Image (tube, rainbow over all chains, first blue to last red; front, top):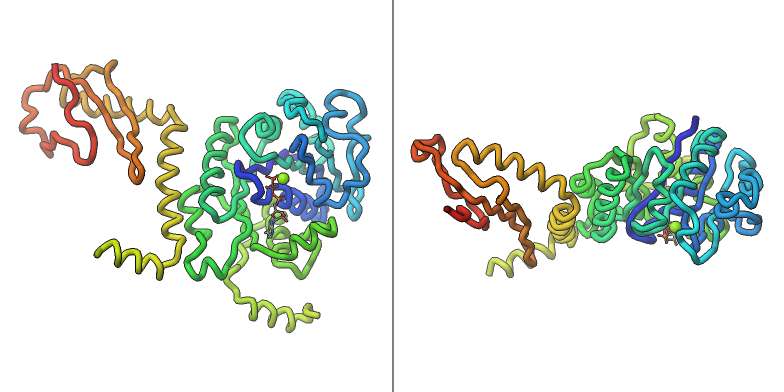
Length: 266
Length: 108
Ligand SMILES: Nc1ncnc2c1ncn2[C@@H]1O[C@H](COP(=O)(O)OP(=O)(O)OP(=O)(O)O)[C@@H](O)[C@H]1O
Ligand SMILES: [Mg+2]
């Protein structure tokens, strides 16, 4: 029986879709069977981040309405084949086309088949959020070190509890070590003080993410990327391994130097 | 003068302290209006403590958050029916609460 994990945030644009794609791919790389579900109805995105947009025939709505079999709608990943599949969101305008009850049923089916089912939740706290959390048994909250994002994360943590999803874990995304050092960005400790939930991972703000999204290949598969390393660590933690949080404070020059020494730099 | 200095030092400290402080306050607002359950629990414990010292009208007890721009106050209105004998010598003896709380409530 697999784990169903919802990736959510409250505030939009903080990195839920990027996180879902990378954790999923990271877990598949560690030998897990993973299914990614895009629940952002009308604003499908996970397909392009995974680079699978050209293969979509059926979507989540077709499945719950019985217009196709579940298997037909699942798109196999380019690299990992049927160990990593995507169920795309419908691009319909009716956001309530899918109900929480239907989501629960679907998750029952998927958790039989996969070790991890990751649900990419839409921004907001309305219908889409309720759908995404309905069939989940665990939640990951994504935030950035900004007031608005942390505030919404706090709100979401409350709503998750109300939905009986206790003990959510936190990912702090887009951290800029230089700004933290100058005292111009809240640190991991600051955010931990405020939200007081377990930190699953810290991901630096990294241009590699934009490059890899352009290519449709999640950054986690790039061995040289710091963000990629952060996601690889998160995937290992989800499998129960104890991996210390990355030292983001390391100076760029040092990082470059280390890469040079290990023969990674071009 | 103090404000000027703190602004000056605020500049040196970086903006994150300001962010953290603002966040802390906004969360007090958010959390307060979010969890009516918490207010209920608070009421019950308040009643428990206060009834050790005086008889109050439990039905009439009101607890609210008063939100102004830069602060939040907890305001309790507690109608007192009668004060127990010997209150003057009660340990600690503090009968007035500090802060911005509305005092005493209605005495009948
Ligand atoms: N660590 C990072 N470093 C640099 N860019 C990032 C990082 N994380 C996310 N981004 C970029 O931020 C943008 C928003 O990310 P993403 O789409 O994953 O957010 P989201 O929370 O899913 O948004 P929405 O609420 O709209 O669904 C994207 O352009 C993505 O490439
Ligand atoms: Mg998204």
